[in-house]
Amino acid sequence: MPRIYLSPPDITAQDHVRVDEVLTSNWVAPVGPHLKAFEEAVADRVGVEHCLALNSGTAALHLALKVLGIGPGDEVICPSMTFAASSNPICYLGAEPVFIDSEPRTWNMDPALLEEALKERPKVRAVIVVHLYGQCAEMGPILELCKQYNLPLIEDAAEALGARYRGEAAGSFGDLAFFSFNGNKIITTSAGGMLLSRNPEWIEKAGYLASQAREPVMHYEHKEIGYNYRMSNVLAGLGLSQFGDLDRRIAAKREHFEAYSRAFENLDGLRMMPVGDSESVNYWLTCILVDGMAKRDQIISALEDEDIEARPLWKPMHLQPIYKSRIFYGTGVSESLFESGVCLPSGSGMPEADRERVIAVVKNCL
Image (tube, rainbow, N blue to C red; front, side, top):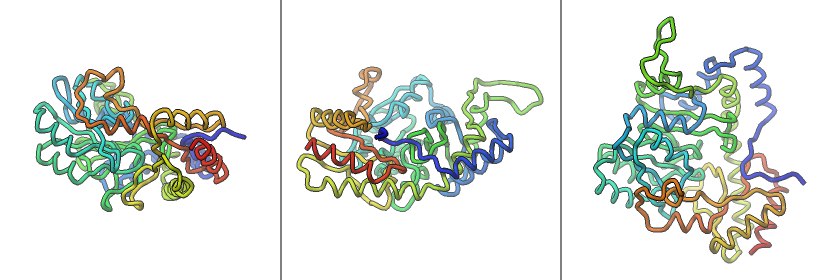
């Protein structure tokens, strides 16, 4: 039987047609009509006027921090429970990350701990909030705190395209926000990201930096250090095709979550990932909690024995060797989640028979 992956790309026949159209047009560089159309489609759905397609979500965060003027001596708040790409760009610029623990309802940044940090740390110059596993953080109190302390908010919606909070789209809350279109995300451009803002000057500046900071003159003129961060028109063509299929993908992932929930509802020692408003989550990955690290590892190993990919939840940044000396505000929530959490296969193209294989292995372990 073929291997079952955690969240593989879901490439459709229509995607092949759309990419072939781009190649036929010969618009293959980081410029072209599909690039603009992809940016406009995302802007329209999210309700944010200005978008910039880039070669990764990490590049988007780097540019977001750059246009805000973050640099040495500054502190930037970031959740601890996330992927390293949410914090590494802070260090690219010589600033210091300050890590905040999760709260148990959404597994996202704890607003109470954020408030504690803001009271104590006058060098904080920005806040990064992350929406984990397709569910938005508690944006109400987080936005209020950023407003109270007059701090820009960067919204890391890499995992949350199509999710909502109180009716508003993920990616629409931050002064700057971004999505990821990596191969494992709900839609993919193989590698890619999108930076969003209602501030046209920030997006214009980011676009300038993303194109090697080339001045608008006849020859090649450079007054600043720039980056090669723009997305190609070919990948934008793929993204545009995938983006038109977003709602079908969310529905498929929700079906996986609900099927896992039904299958596991009577199992002792297993809890499903908490979901607040079921209509507002994109269900990027279905996650479960079990009784401790030994049981977590047993389940992942048993799945691997059946050629099924599963992983622990994100290992918190404050536990990572590279960040062990950095400042952390916490109560142990993210550590507990890491020790007992398992991400299960959740691809939008996964057939029911494969899902039943996963369910059988987990049940056998419990």
